[in-house]
Image 1 (cartoon, rainbow, N blue to C red):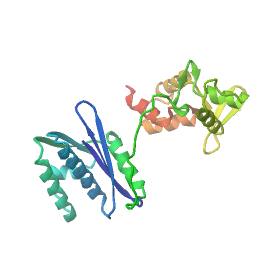
Image 2 (image 1 turned 90 degrees about the vertical axis):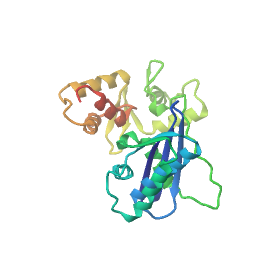
Image 3 (image 1 turned 30 degrees about the horizontal axis):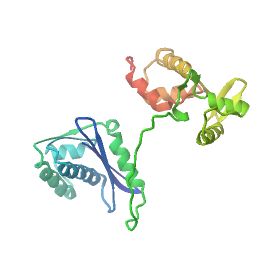
Image 4 (image 1 turned 180 degrees about the vertical axis):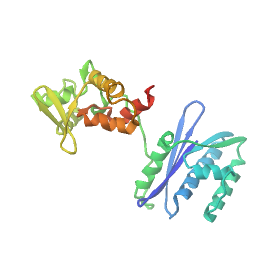
Length: 263
């Protein structure tokens, strides 16, 4: 079970992700309609997850959260100095007695992204308790969207956009929605001769490259004069400074930097 809480001026939200041994995922999110601290949202998220696990008659549970304070307090390794957290800690202990085996462990925030996203999503909603609330559906599409499609039938990911800007032509099999997407994306690109550029927010033109060119750029960045002395974020920023653009963008650059053997 993964859990997380989020708080800011928009409100307070909590998210829980239950993962079965077979890999099935059950996600829950709730907005807290009362004023509380961030530590309380963490406890509320954990309690919601434990209650659902009890209702599902789960007997063995591994609880993971990125709140080091809460995890250590529940394990009675740290003292609880905030009186408001004492009832929460006691209730977590009470719920834990319903399981044959339960453990609490801390995980880094980057390993708890789904629960964090659910908590943030709940926090952003402006709920109207007088109206019926419909469940949020998260689906995975089998068809790649244009903004993430790096390669397509040995053509660069920007081929359709370039063709539209150059000739005002759409792909033969393009639907009405595809044509609308191409027109919208083309507004952010600029064609100079045979080279396509992406218009950056600061009016800097970023040269569009295909998959092979992107791999070569990544190799030059990590093994060339730049070296790998910088962390992932700085490496990604350096790549973008060179004026290149491809659809994997900064998140994949950071992932590549972390996985690189020289990092």
